[in-house]
Length: 67
Image (cartoon, rainbow, N blue to C red; front, side):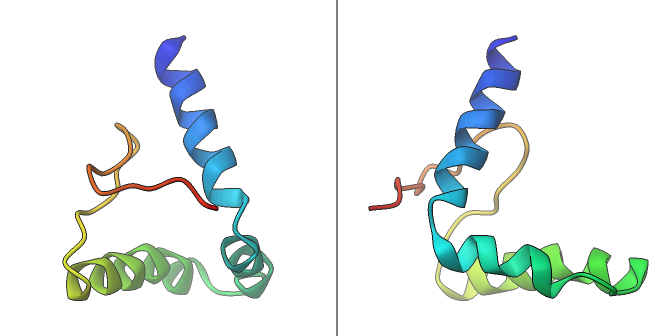
């Protein structure tokens, strides 16, 4: 139960950012292969910025709440 609540809190925090909310509609109509590529692109961007990868296990150590 605690993991589920934690996951929901992380999602709610991410969705506070309008730029994050804008991503989902942009993916509409993409093929399954293209949708699978989106997380890889985000992971690459995080790596370029020296941020840790994000998993469903919890927030990365460098996670900051949205303002």
